[in-house]
Length: 166
Image (cartoon, rainbow, N blue to C red):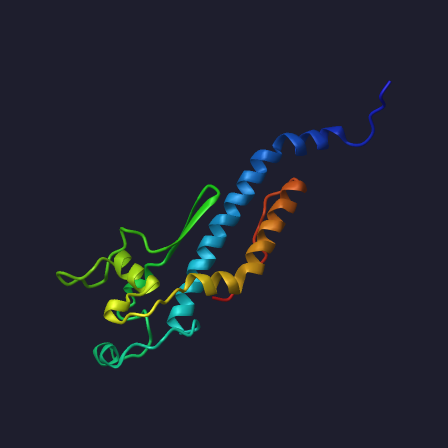
């Protein structure tokens, strides 16, 4: 005969609810992470933390600034962190609009792609804010995932430890 010991009701609750709780916790981590990455990217661009090549002299004269990727602020402010399920998107969506639009200007998403990948033909250097953002906050994001898994094992919902400095 097998003898049971311990709190079997508690164990049943943990085991039966594990998959749903795990999904909810990971989805919450993805949402918080996407929003944090977007905030950090925006701040990094606005504060010139990524060491991008300054604007050319003609661009500086037109904009009145050597700060790359910031003109009216429309592009930077359009960076979003969006999560659906266990997937996340950080960047500029196709539906993003300029504050002030002039005929013939490229859509923000296309302008962002040109800045991200660069365009040698017209002298625009590559300016990637995603890689340095993820590199700088990688440990925080991994820790959040580890905490979410631990919360799932502890039969509780995950909560972010603290806000990060953007």
